[in-house]
Amino acid sequence: MLDSFDVMLWAMVVATLMPDLGLSKPTVGLLGSLTLAASAVGGLHLRGGRRPLRPSQSVDGSILIYSVFTAACGFATGVAMLAVFRVFLGLGMGGEWASGAALVSETWPAEHRGKALGIVQSSWAVGYAAAAAVAALVLPVWGWRGVFFVGVIPAFFTLWIQRKVKEPEIWRAVGRRHRASERDSARSSAANVSA
Image (cartoon, rainbow, N blue to C red):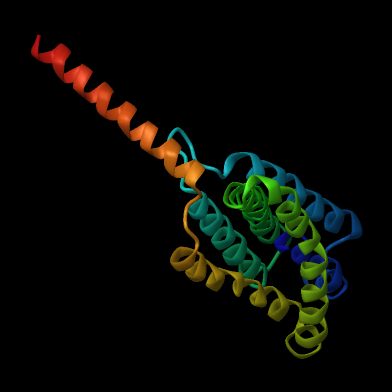
């Protein structure tokens, strides 16, 4: 949903943003492409490093990155600043999609996962409609900067995730095995040191 929300917001505000920041059409296309490329990178890399984050932490972190940098776009005073904000926004957007889809697929029963992922994919239309509503209500009153400031709202969704979303059993089982393996390694290392 955040991906379609952003793609649509960008399309709806770009005509008013271009003269304010002195952007050419090729620059606007480049900024859009940078955002999408960054979303691919975010989708591949925002699941944690050597010790993966809990799935809900990945979703939370990605949404926060997306929200903060969407709002930051409203503070942009030039193309370089906007490009940096759009790249980080894209990282969060891609991370949210990948980690959110993984969380959904891990929490739904196997026989309903296809339906769950279908719902996730169909949320594109919800994001598209939300962007159209935001642009219609906010753009005429507060301009393109105000539209981007609205992008901080998904950050509040993370509070609900932290309180209400339980980690999938699959992840908890992997975590238990990982912790047991670390304890065994620590015991083995301690035995080697004392020998």
